[in-house]
Length: 268
Ligand code: SAH
Image 1: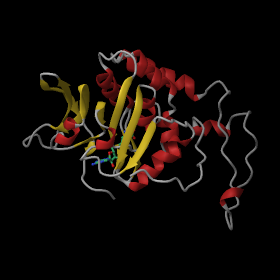
Image 2 (image 1 turned 60 degrees about the vertical axis):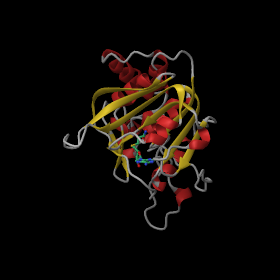
Image 3 (image 1 turned 120 degrees about the vertical axis):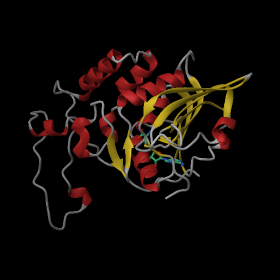
């Protein structure tokens, strides 16, 4: 199910992209060769770290805003303060990367807004001291949440059904060299039995119901966090569902309303 890695590393933009034009620390940009250009002749966009207005400061400001919203788990906030969200979005969106907004990542999918990602990770992590064990993520998307999970759990299995996004996530994550993140291309509906049982399962796409396979693959003591349809008469509304698997059975808790892309079957 895992796939090899044929493409070379992609140059990611610095942050904010437009600062490169004004920064004195950036080497002069060579003129673009518009005709007959080959990839290796393209001028590289240099990162602008070290000019004072680097992405770290903007990220800390994002974390401060999340804390003001009542999101206070130190491990989750630390992860959000260190993973560079701007590296996971397209160049044109880099300047919005630290706003609390969802952004398109291609193929009709979106990276969730930081507040929602933080909330779901806090729920997954709640009451569990230290690192979580193995976690299954349904919907790798651009790989941002998988990168956050990497520092919060021992192993991350992340499944994506769209080949284009699976490849994109692999490219985006390459520079981080996260040995405990396993990207899988496939349909996440049946879960991923080979990694089970999981201490946590987190879904970034919402279906009519939580597939039974996910609950089956949850360890006793484990927790699942997923968006799910609010019901047949809910006009497409979704709620966040928390499912705890206990010695006594499965306990479901319905949380606030959310808006996620649909959980779909099969691969494409
Ligand atoms: N966590 C992601 C969010 C991606 S959006 C991030 O950080 O970018 C949700 C993703 O779920 C989409 O990429 C969509 O293609 C994927 N998805 C939807 N149904 C799926 C399924 N059955 N199996 C695997 N991935 C699925």
